[in-house]
Length: 250
Image (tube, rainbow, N blue to C red):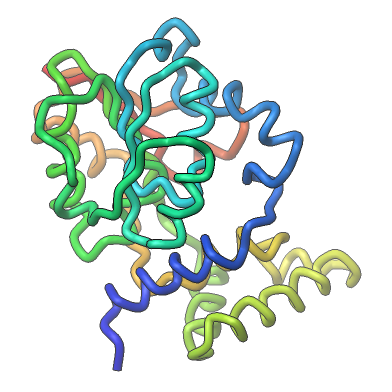
């Protein structure tokens, strides 16, 4: 039987290699055009806060946020632990390497901004991966994270059912069927908590999904040497459900 870590990594490798279309990926023209504005909304910062800064994109996936940082004039380095994600990110002209969030492949205190969107909650040790990547931030630099909050029992049930399917290809096909049902069958939205195949696969297929709350994340920031911590009230997505948080290094 595969370990939870190995299956999670393989899930993301399949995802970035085979599920390249989504309303929130660079394959969508609207998102590609607006991704820099969406990123600023996610960060709660201005263009002037980003331009000419050195950014590390942790767990970059297919590079959508790296692309947005480049668009804002930042110098971007990225890493991901899926080979397919690294290959996709290379195609947009970003310096990217294969790496594990528990062992970041960069020197300490080198980055003006460390960005980890939906990464640490998929590692075997959220606290350790957070602390290790916090070490990459310069004094007065910024770390921004997105971490899962508490999920509904409905979503957890869907995860359990999807995990019973051993093949990632069949998981994709199953999610696609239910996305179709959601768009065609009245009232099905109450039972199906996902609307596109990529988003559904991302939410359901990884085996490791650690949930946190604001107080826990704030404590992680403070113990990692950040003096100013805030929760970002994003408008592009529901900030009340999950933890979009940011700290400034002492």
